Amino acid sequence: MPIWKDEKKSKREYVEVTPSRAEDLWLRCQSCGELVFRKKLAQNSYICPHCGAYFFLSAQERIASLVDEGSARDVTAPLVANDPLGFVDRKPYPERVKEAQRETGLLDAVAVVEAEIGGHPVVLAVMDFRFIGGSMGSVVGEQLCLAMERAIESRSPFVLVAASGGARVQEGVLSLLQMPKTVLVRRKLAEAGVPYIAVFTYPTTGGVLASIASLADITLAERGTRIGFAGPRVIEQTTKEKLPPDFQTEGFALAHGMVDQVVPREALRDELARILAILDGGRDGG
Amino acid sequence: MVDEATLKALEEKVTELRRLVEQDGLALDDELALLERRLEELRREYFAKLSDWDRVKLARDPRRPTGIELVEQVFDDFYELRGDRLLRDDPALRGGLAKLSGKPLVVLFHQKGKTLEEQKRYRFGMAGPAGYRKAVRLMELAGRLRLPLVSLVDTPGAYPGVEAESHNIAGTIAQCLQTMLGLPVPTVAVIVGEGGSGGAVAIACADRVLMLEYAIYSVISPEGAAAILWKDQKAAPKAAEALGLSAPKLKDLGIIDEVLPEPLGGAHSDPQATAATVRTALERHLSELSSLPLDKLLSLRYKRYRHAGSYRELEGRP
Ligand SMILES: [Zn+2]
Image (cartoon, protein in one colour):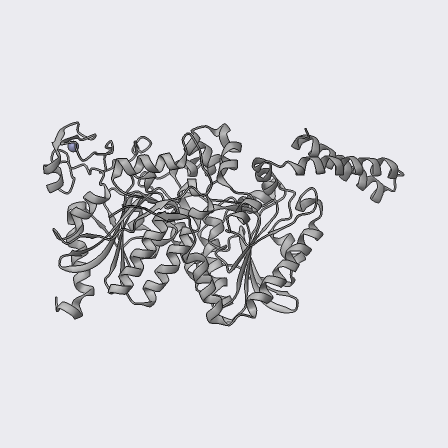
């Protein structure tokens, strides 16, 4: 999926990659053109060793890059999308879902694990932009709610790594209702006093940003992220405004008070571990 | 087949003739009666086979009663409260105190305009962060004073712009959701025109959600869906059909509770009758909700939104 086509104005650290298949041993960096050995890339947090560009992470790769080795237990509920509207655009929605499942090895656009980060147990939900643009439909909404309920149950912090183009159009208003739905359970999480950390990755936008993602206790943005409610083209078309060069970048979000920290990818795991350690101070004495 | 343009032309003719008869006292009663009969026939024909795209156009028709027009006819003693207590007052999302059957409540509503000048002033009903901050403020007020909250939804969506993004429009909408879902009072939303995505749901996550018959409620505009999914602006009518945005469809899906019938020709052909329908429905739903103990009200709300969605368990997975 071409994600940088209309972003020439600002230099980004993310690069466009064709959805990586597990069998590809070598991946080409779209930024510098070099071929990179996949294993080496994984060891380097999926940052190009030649030019420093960020490769697009799948949910599985993201999980592996964040959690203590061997600590992750997949607790994603076995749920799949229905087709409540019988939605057909250029292809039927069920076909799109099946394709995305084949491409990503996921059931829908989010994976949930119980894991440890720096020795601290968490419930970690990671969205995958490759799955229909990381869009939030009924399954994503339910998975996020189940994940938060699991966090309440186990009293472990909830960590959400967001990557989403917004609500899933193909499920209509049912997708829109995932906004109040996830916010409702987020309220329960707050009542239970369980911490919630959000990490905005490329891109965190639309209905996901306007609901669950914006309501964390602590919010980090990975460097190179796009953070915004409306797409730049919609804004330009509707308002004829000229967009500032840093518009909707992580720096823009930081400058406007929307996130606590901007973190380079290679530091994300340690940053999370540090926060978790502070929050967990009473329990393990640091 | 009757098209929209023919219908509109005849509607204008009838309005003009009525004016001549009523104001200038011209003896054109026979002509008027004839045209009115013809108009009713045309309307019956047109409204009998309304496409979803026709409904989109009806929902957006600037002749439809706007927020303030409905509020003034549905409620008594509307007293407007302004400002987000931070930066400004957003005219596209308004609210205040009002009374319904003698009981006080808080009302929130999107405001559109009828003339181009008004439309610009109200930014076509697209509110920014200040509007949604004001909504949070009025929701909190309703919660503190234990007043029911009613919202009338009519927006193409939240305002997309550099300033809106700079002032965290997304986070403000999230706060609206968070606040509204936690209110210890009955909440009823009526989608009276356009229910456009996040900007609509922000004030529509209520205990009861009602819709006027020709209103629409959608995750994205048909034009937006056409551009993204069909890669073709001209596919908007097709997208409208696919999105399931009509009131009857949303009732079938269990997303809304009730479709409020509009007069023949749509809300604008008889705003008083439309307002009366809204008022009666609000009285009924608010009285039902007000009779519930608070814990019951909150648990019903929790169930309603916790179980929103459509998915299935995967079979045969280890
Ligand atoms: Zn490179």
